[in-house]
Length: 569
Image 1 (cartoon, rainbow, N blue to C red):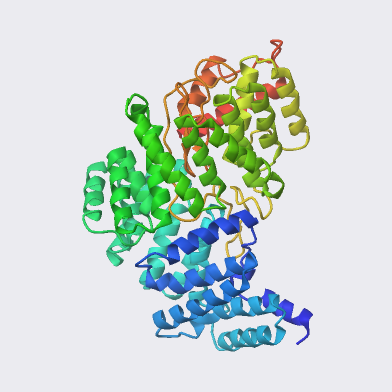
Image 2: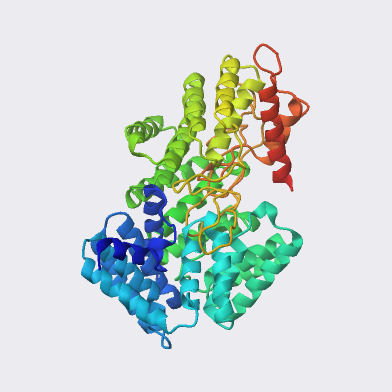
């Protein structure tokens, strides 16, 4: 078979290499770390183990680690053969497709052709061009991959269930994907009730699945059944936890509905049982961070002890996740709170040397954090503005870009020294065809992982979720707002806030959070902060330095207040 002909046949296979998973290198690295953490857990749900290793093999190969990819493919086949007693060969269609691609990338065309022909023989006698087991694996993969692919995952689960409606694993997977496919602010009471019912059925089908259980209790609480949810949560932790799927959501639940201390205590006790788990150490670090930036902790004279514990833990976590930008930035926040600005400075200086190799989304995130750090920790307002502008210049519709736009707008609103320059800068971006601060814009190609991504193949034109890409795994916490304050910057009383400063709105948080500084999806201004900012100028005008209203600035103000109204829905 000629190489060109082989490539055409490869592109027609149903496998990870044809499912449009070619995102940025940093995204794939982050996913690989997450999948490695899952694969190292005790009690991995056996039905998904083959899917997990197939996915991990793809990530290894995409990042150039062929030997690791082949090792994972071997483990994937072992797991699939053990868990698929009936129709085991048909369950290997995706697996053989992955093997064909890996050998092709290695230049081993004969081996690649062998696996292409194996897939052809398996599908030749199958009545459906895409078997249910293939839809199921594709659904699982898309659900794990990215927020923007979760609507496509729901579609794939539905297609899989058409062929196997009584499959317990598929029904549980569908319940989880369906619950994660809709942005929180878009969930109506009717939709929440439907989500809750799917999770209730899934929980009955698989009562030992921690992820399903914690999603269920979270939806219970959101529907107003807080007492029942808390009772269930306490029952969950009565027995030792050996599987960590959903553990981050469980900690977030305890933080939101019981107490910060209960969340910390649960993380500590679980870590004592699994002292080598880097994932649990990171979870505990987040629990410390949540409490450090909570309003009540601000008034605690013993807060410095918790900060010191967090610093020590985050220093270890950084060594365990050496490529994680998010962890390094979180450590700078801990250093800032402990007064060790020299150490935070060193991290930022080292990251500045790496910016040429950063993916656009990581670079945007770095600029946003660094700009806030310069203002609040270093009192360098002018340089902070320069760095915020760099974040805004990266045309990715993310929470970090929105954050930097809002800070710049707050300076214009308050008539800062550089207000007119900022208006001209934002107007220049408008003329380039991208509305400044427009968080509702369409997604970007391949490497953004951000909202508004067009539907993936396998989904009939489904739009991506609002909200940012997020990381695979247990992220999705609601975030933690610090003390309220107004939206000013550059010396205004009550600031837009970063890293838990007194009177600030934002603190370092997690993906999907509101009113926090943190991973993708965060917004520095809380709903109350946005409302306060809009109220200061009657929700109608935004004054430039010389007092003149500009049409462009007014349009941005309208967009900002529209965001505010949407967040209150």
